[in-house]
Length: 100
Image (cartoon, rainbow, N blue to C red):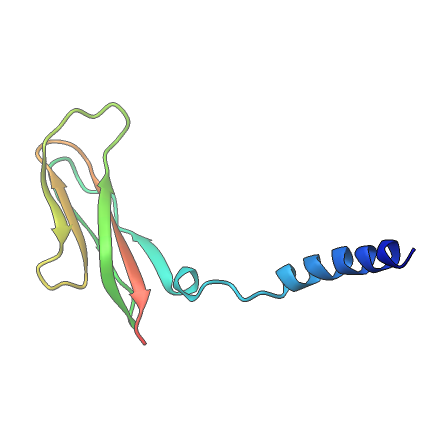
């Protein structure tokens, strides 16, 4: 009988412990910033907000676009992500992290 009474108490306590566990700090400090959609063949830059620094980035082309991406990397001033395609509109994305 004692084992049966102790087991439900343990099962009820376990979910409470999982709910109160802190979230990972990295997930709380990263933010993805979307730049403006460029004009055809023009650049798009996603700029990190104040108090953050660039950790990565990328781009998105319109669905079905078949174009050459001429630039995909950090902006020259390292404050965001820069992307450009030959003839298509493009959108840059920057991954920014809170400065400690």
